[in-house]
Length: 278
Image (tube, rainbow, N blue to C red; front, side, top):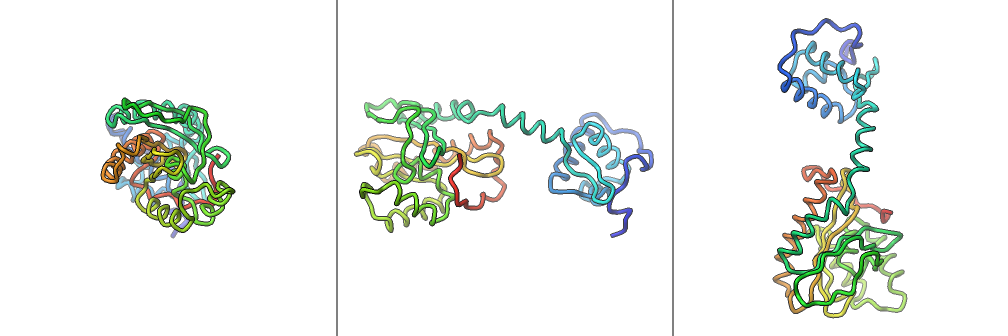
C-alpha cells in the first residue's frame, strides 16, 4: 500500500464538490462513523468501503473531525473521536436497566398472569431489582432487594449462561455446603449445558418448594449478560409443555430489553466469562 493510500491529511486534500442534500449528507456521515468503528482506516480504504469518491469521503470525514466525532492520524487514518466516547458514556448513564425493563416486564406479567422478576449479579448472588406480581393466587416469597443463590434460581442460572464449567462448579459447591441442592452436580451441569445452548434457564422447584420459573438473560451493548428476567408460578401452572412455550416469550422480552441497552442481536454471542459481573 502506498503512503498516499494510508491516509490523507484533511488540511491538504483537494477541494470537494458541491454538497448533496442534507438528509443524504447525514446518512453518509453516519456511514462514515460506522465504518471507522471497525478500527483505524485510511481515506482511500474508507472511500472504497462506502462506495464514494475520495473528495466526498474526505469532506464528510473532515467535518466529523472538526466536530470531534473522528480523529485523524497521518500514518494510520481516521478513528473514532472523543465526542463519540463522551456521548456513549452519556447514553449509558441515561439507560437504567430497571427503567428500560419495567414496561416490558409489566407486559410479560399481564400476558402470562404470572410473577415476573428482574435481577442482576451482585457479589456472587442474584439481586432482585424489580418484581411484578402475577394475577394468580400464588405466593412467591421473593422481595425487591433480596439476594438469592445463582445456582438454584432460574434467574441466577440465566445470569450464568456465559460462564465456564469451572465457574459453575465452584459456585455450585460454595452455595451448597450442606447439600441443600435437590439434584447432584452432574445432573445440574447437564441441565446448565442445555440451558446455555438454548439461551434460557429453568428453576424446577430447586429454590422454593412447588415454585417453577423460566428465565432469560439481558445483555448490554458489549453482548455481556448484565441482568436477567424470570417468570415464576406454582408448579401446577408450570407443566413442562407450558415452560417450553413460555421460554419463547421470556427470551423475546429479555432480548427487547437488551436492545434498549444497546445490544445488537446480529452480533455474535459474547464469549463465556470466568467471572460473575458486579
